[in-house]
Image 1 (tube, rainbow, N blue to C red):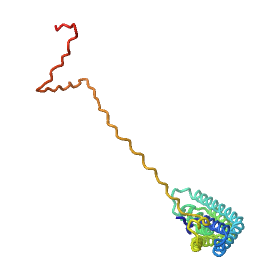
Image 2 (image 1 turned 90 degrees about the vertical axis):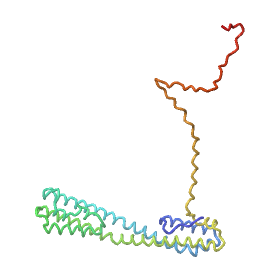
Image 3 (image 1 turned 30 degrees about the vertical axis):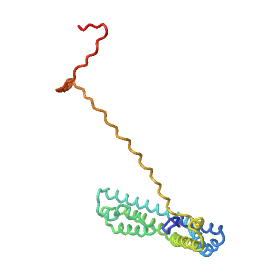
Image 4 (image 1 turned 120 degrees about the vertical axis):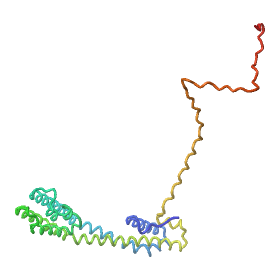
Length: 268
């Protein structure tokens, strides 16, 4: 049986079906067009508006997000360099508890996760270096490391703050569009019920609404019948000393057959 799209389907598919349904209904005219104007058009206007706002927000945020990406990569690279400089300065140990305290899980603690929180994590690294948690770390390397991380943290925080409003707006519009799209999927099903209540058959309704029913499974061809088993040929074994044929005797043995003499043949 034909089905309408489910609200759990991909957002782009729901949007496509909704627009297609509205277009087909308006082209059909009559009751279908009237119902589409009442039920579908208001939601379609909302969807179109949200999509336009999302595209505008993404275009505005593109440059800010690109700058944020540059600052993020620069900060990650600086953290890696500081980690190497400190490790080399303390003698390149295979295992060191004080070094692990400054760099738990290596650099991942500082560079992974939400970029908006990375400047705070970098500030923590500055505090650990400043606190002289490693007795072998020379003052010069510590001072240079603190200056590098502080400068990169400041630059990254500025990029994060500049992009924060744009990122927040995009995230909000994405959620709103998802919620309205799910409502649109429900409205398609309601629209189908209204069409049927106004005399449309199931098949006729789906000349307007795209059919999202699963394709029927193809019947598998039956397995070919197995060929009849062929009797195995008798196995003939050869031996250097072949067994002698078995001669059976009978109490009434058959008399030998004597052929008649050829003409002119002597009996002796």
